[in-house]
Amino acid sequence: MSSSLIDTIVFNGDIVTLDAHTTRVSALALHNGRVVAAGSDDDILPLAGSDTQRYDLDGRFVIPGLTDAHIHWQGVARALHQVDVFEVESKQVAVERVAEYAQRLASGEWIIGHGWVQDIWPGKAFPSAADLDSVTPNHPVYLRAKSGHAAWVNSLAMRLVGINADTPDPDGGQIVRDANGAPTGILLETAMDLVADKIPSQTAEQLAEQMKAAQTHALSAGLTGIHDFDDPLCLQALQILRERDELSIRVVKNINQAFLPAALESGLRWGFGDEWLRIGGLKLFSDGALGPRTAYMIEPYIGEPNNYGIPVIDKEEMIELVQQATLAGLPSTIHAIGDRAVHDVLDVYQAARRVEHEHHISRTSRRHRIEHVQIVHPDDAHRLAELNLIASMQPIHATSDYIMADTYWGERSRFAYNPRLQIDQGVVVAFGSDAPVEPLHPLKGIHAAVTRQRPDGSPGPDGWYPDARLTLDEALHGFTTGPAYAAGMESSVGKLAPGYLADLVVLSEDLYAIPPSDILHVDVIATMVGGEWRYGEM
Image (cartoon, rainbow, N blue to C red; front, side):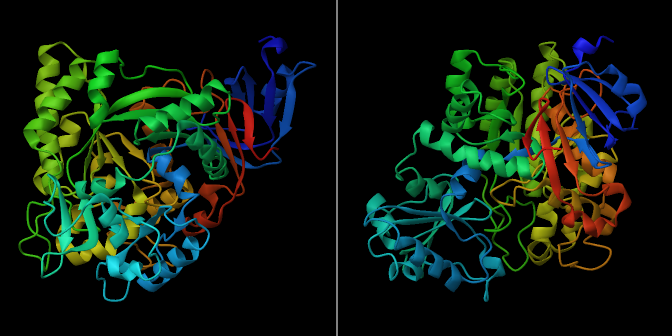
């Protein structure tokens, strides 16, 4: 190999390639942002030319770049510029933070925030508009729950958008009301849009600026790629960064239901774009979430005999949309949390596979996904494998939600938050965070996957349903090769092998040499994307 083909060499490292042919090496040779050779220092250093950049890794542990396969990127970027009520310990703390934030704003400006969880508050009761009214008489307030499936608003916000006792519940949503029928200030599922749609929107330029800080945050956590599920404004902002050469992470941009007609009319197909920004699939919501008890269930929630959750979209409509998309070159990716929702989505994909077979469309060209797969009925546990579906899951949800799952699902939780069920059947799993629902930090997800424990060690030394624990290899593949396959990029990302993009993360510790509980204390030293150090430098 000519030295003129090598512009960068990283050496003296402990590099896990996730390539079956050469699992560990000490050096990589790079050219034009790709790996061209991997091996020992003795193999690679002689390839250097006079102009080759050499980076001594000083024995550091290196893994392929990590990808978050389920993220709301616009939400992450905006959350860095909003009131912080993420997992605050009480309603009172949330109200205090809103009051403090209001003092910085001109009268009439909206207060936006995210992350409250009533289930961790004393009494576990939903808050109300009245809780906010005394501290925000002149500011409309919209606070999304951590789950993203409920919103807490004040009375001024409801007056501005016309929500009152006579306002009907929208399809797929609920305005929570008191005993007299008056709205309490809690909006579930599509009812959230009654307020959200009236909040002054950002421009794409404003969002692009916010994304720069979010991008730095992601790189500092070891992320080199994301799969996004937000609206077209997010795509516009990402394109602005791309055309300015300021996009430093790789993005797969999925298309939400409302924008499918425009995508079909334009002829967009899965994979359109480049290695930095490309089109994913159609995103649909089939149900709600566990937090507000709107996940769609076969049997009711424990203690709530009349509550089966909320189906957000009719099953027949899902079938029609998924088939329309697949015939136009788009796979689908469907949010399903409750076991009834997962069952219905499996039926939807079974119908889609029949249509694809009739039209001679290969299964590998339509990489359909189920997002979350949080609880599966035992009778359905085998069907993802049979239908060649991807399980897009978030390991950290298991440790965050296990108390709620035990409370409301009981023994059914054995089949909840369980990627082990799918991996053992050969299903490709793609892991993410669902940020800003959970922290944007893949090492926390890896820790949750291999320990099934929270950072404090709860629920005990063996973790929650320990049979669902993964090996470190399985967890790493969930954040690397799994998302790569889901994106159709399995030949270019997810490994550190010749021909693959030079995306890598330098860590402070060898993940294989430390107790799993110590993964949380590992630092990201540097992150390289496309052969350039985007965070830190060796």
